[in-house]
Amino acid sequence: MESTMKEMRDGASVLDMDPNSTVGGGVEDVYGEDRATEDQLVTPWTISVASGYSLLRDPHHNKGLAFTEKERDAHYFRGLLPPVVLNQQLQEKKFMNSIRQYQVPLQKYMALMELQERNERLFYKLLIDNVEELLPVVYTPTVGEACQKYGSIFRRPQGLYISLKEKGKILEVLKNWPERSIQVIVVTDGERILGLGDLGCQGMGIPVGKLSLYAALGGVRPSACLPVTIDVGTNNEKLLKDEFYIGLRQRRATGEEYAELLQEFMSAVKQNYGEKVLIQFEDFANHNAFELLAKYGTTHLVFNDDIQGTAAVVLAGIVSALKLIGGTLAEHTFLFLGAGEAGTGIAELIALEMSKQVKAPLEETRKKIWLVDSKGLIVSSRKDSLQHFKKPWAHEHEPVHSLLDAVKAIKPTVLIGSSGVGRTFTKEIIEAMASFNEKPLILALSNPTSQSECTAEEAYTWSEGRAIFASGSPFDPFEYNGKVFVPGQSNNAYIFPGLGLGLVISGAIRVHDDMLLAASEALAKQVTEEIYEKGLIYPPLSNIRKISASIAANVAGKAYELGLATRLPRPQNLVKYAESCMYTPIYRSYR
Image (cartoon, rainbow, N blue to C red; front, side, top):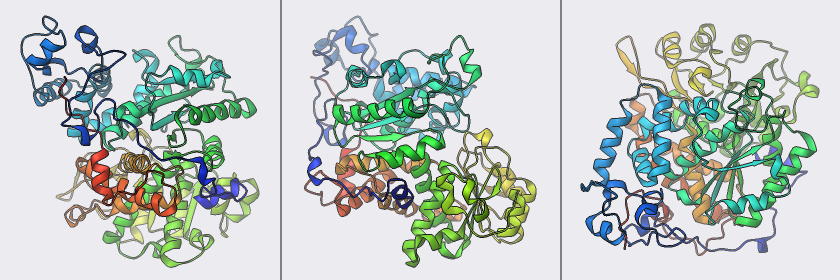
């Protein structure tokens, strides 16, 4: 991946930088969010010490009915709350009982967002303790519907909206955000939201959802997270005609106007928050995603989850799947449907890992990987008409126009879907994969569920129960011939929260491909024999905090090894250090 970016940067690497441009140092735990400060008394500061009605309206500090008798006296709550005192566990039980009454996922989403705006710690406690149940609600697939209807369900701002109207004033806009110690920013321009296309300003649901997971699953402090939507217009005619649309009513700005706005944003972020703030690009269209990653990879701490996060989680799944399907990575042949951000990003990371394992040039290991786009198999005869990020995958082969014909010609052992187009892995394709593989590995990665290349039921049925299957969005367990199959989920939430935490705790100033490989390696190691026996290639999400701490430690270790870490000295035990830095939503006691 770095090699592709270096070509776009005229040979520059993320390791080429001025060592004097960075400084070490931590960030003060203002709200008492980290595990290390759990037992300390907290003063509920807002502008002054919050008390009474204002404290009940502050989501950072509000505990609802969990305020003790002593706190109710000290902070002037008498009469403002009913007399009962409930502990956090009972509050959690009460809210989960309530949310389970909703039949429509969007209603659950709205109820959770309202809770987050009212009582932040209880929201994260719910999400951490019920991650497998609530993850599909706060993120894919429900967040896709939330973005489509964001104009109608919008209640109050949850992040920063930076539009063309703010050009020349972006630094002032950043200073309007109430928090000063920002560690992670997730930014989108809304042009390619999941598999749903251009949702413009309504794409804000994605940065909000991603940062909720950074905090809940990775332990990054909520106060240090900033969701941002860059609004340059939309080409979605339906939104432009929608009276409730909340964004700019104009067609998308492109070219120089677009580039200048992004440049101003990136410069303002570094000026306002410093060198070590992680900027995650999210759901940008292909033509911008690769250019932004290449342009800012050597000057900022940037990460693209669609390209790099997806690649890392899929590589981890493939590496762990080798124990089920046999062979080494280099002995397998890979065929992708989809040659955009996700497809080429995954392919490059697989080739990079293969290159390291067999000590072969990257150009050589790429030849084990084939990609199909909307025009058919990517082959050398098409090279002149290909976009730059597809050219490394143009191998010598006669033209092939359909995926089925490509499967028959290439005979892959691993079939990966990243096309964003649903039901493209047909019965004939799965049957063909099963005809020359004892255990075909089928990864249908496109989100949301409606865009998945095939369902778990289809993969298991058409392969006669022999397929090893994982998908981007969750599917229910499926029974075939008396055996219950539990489909795995190749969810980016396995990787990006732990990766982000690792970058934060090490004070990293750049993201290197070796850090992505380190994250993949840590995730693959979390798959136990008991998990393999169920046919799964990913660990249960219920262990995600432990998994994230391991990933963070691996990533931080690689940052120190590469000389990209600034938080010195290096902690002796990085796993314990990562755990001590993780946000915990346990209520604090107030003075």
